[in-house]
Length: 247
Image (tube, rainbow, N blue to C red; front, side, top):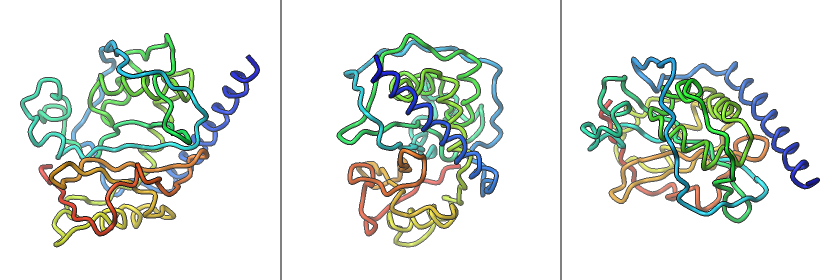
């Protein structure tokens, strides 16, 4: 019982630090370019039922990953997919980097599916839909990751939003036109727009054909940028990268 209480206090302290640090970052840096174009928020959204698809794992949190997906690549072949309609049809706006999720990390793996009966409300999901344009994705991120960080979906979504909104987003359409583009160029482009952000804290996920799918931004327990471990860092700086424009 005492161990659970101590862990709860530590989690609340870390999240309080996140809110303070990320809010300060947001105040200092307005975005270079918006990542949602002509997107408007509904007042509420449906709350999907999320089925667990893996084992429950609870462990001390050693850091965090903010995963942001490059929407033009995701939507490249999904413009007619009804399950991706909000993100890819164009009827709800166009998107650049969208918030995949905020993930806690452990020393040997990551916590996930920490048991909870708490579900987000429709209005709580709706607040995220210009950052994460899928109600199912928003609900799943809470169930799989957020419940291992805090007891409240509202707090989880708030921390995720502050971190995402506090980042400066350089023009990746412009970067995509650079000849012989590399993973190092992508890291340097992002780090140059975010003062004090080391390029080693920018993880990259490419698909099998070498196209950019996702950035995985690495933080320590205080939500300060920290060098990614091998698993999150992705391809070395010399690796070739392609970026699908399509906005």
